[in-house]
Length: 87
View 1 (cartoon, one colour):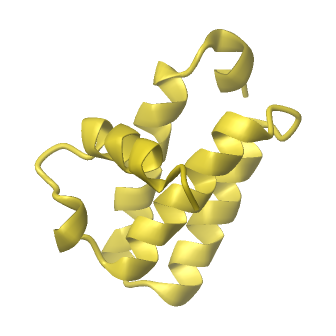
View 2: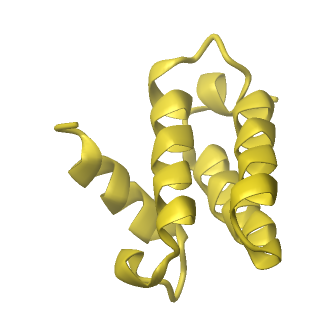
């Protein structure tokens, strides 16, 4: 996907003290997928996107990943224009 660089840039801005290379592959790709959906599918409420990402993290990553993914996605959500960040 040509947009991965932009997604990664936004994730880096909001994942304080974490390099993408240090993130678990599941978490990194889950953040990319959720961010893509937040940016390009405004008809899906951000809370739904985040909740779906958290369910996937619960199932396929470790227990600390849920809090990490939630924190990063919530920080990104609050930085989006208000029409995209409303829950």
